[in-house]
Image (tube, rainbow, N blue to C red; front, side):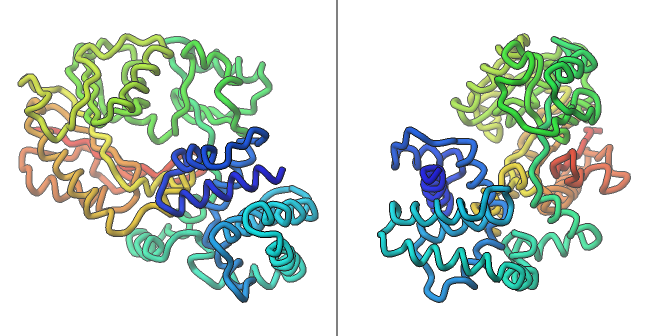
Amino acid sequence: MEDNQRLAVWVLWYVFQGKNVDQALLLAEKELKLSQVNLGAVKDYTYGVLRYGWQLKYLVKKLCKKYPTQLIENLLLIALYQLLYTHDDSFTIVSQAVNTAAKLDHIAVKGFVNAVLRTFLREKDGFLQLARNNEEALYNHPQWWINKIKKQYPLIWKEIFNEAQCRAPFTLRVNTQQCRVEEYLKKLSEANCDVVWVNKEAVVLSTPCSVEKLPGFDVGMVSIQDASAQLAPDYMDLFSEARVVDACAAPGGKTCHLLEQGQSIQLLALDKSEERLQRIRDNVKRLRLTSPTLGITVADARDVNSWWDGVQFDRILLDAPCTGSGVVRRHPDIKWLRRESDIHQLVAEQEALLNNLWPLLKPQGKLVYVTCSIFKEETSEQIQKFLKKHTDAKQLNSGSEQESFIKPDSFHDGFYYAVCQKN
């Protein structure tokens, strides 16, 4: 439908203005007030353009002698995405784009859009070969990002970019307080879902679906969470009655996973956002878990005096704010919203969290530092700097970088874990 293209055009407009996809979709829906749209198609067009955008923008630049307005450019990006990466009929795509152009701009632009898309279809192989010779268009990341990954991961940088352009796996975490993994796999099989059991509670569906179609989702049998994020309890090494703080807890995937382990830990969940903390409360209720015994509290974890009761912790989980460079296939808008200058500010925030939380840890206690970034400034370099400053700290999983860094692959997002024990 043309309205699907038109709504996606406006979603992209807001993303390119600096909004994330969720914010952009709300603003675009408010702008157009369309009632007959397929949100699944709109999201597919939007995410597709954000995923392959540097290639698509390169093609638009080569195809257009006179560069179009932003809205018409967005429409061309969507149509090119459909022509290259969907099974939609080419004639229908072009026809809809031509009609959408008139609604977006002026009837005179219909001929321009028609000519551009038909030129691409006639000379597609040649245009695609040109794009393959451009590094940004080939790897669909900004050049500063490409340069950084090439330097930091000289042996695997191509693998990282190849994975980053794939669709993210649809991964579930089985709540073993409600259902054994084997039992849930049987339920998925009965629902005709093709699934792979990755490890422990993590299972991957070959085809994503809405949560309403997941067996037992409404009664807490399962949550959506990447396999890398599900490793947190392994690194935490929990025990009964352990006093634990989840310092940057929202939206609560790791918080709930810790509670699902079935150990009677004393847990405190902190986050700066009350709105995001409500998502933890909602998920605790849906998963039928006991609410954290030490509370779910609005606080900036760096401001220790505002929330700490003076009793040290056995375990600290610090899922630190980061660039999100390891999860761009799941959130491709990150590639467009992040700037290289953001790294310095985030590194400073991570450093402050590490330094301010460390005194709250008991001797022999463990702090688990987690990021969904693959930039070394936020991962291994951050931890090495921390260890030099705190001589009473030892990294337990430091035998090789691979023990801390989880490389993006078909089942895992890019993550980093460091377990630091206090002497």
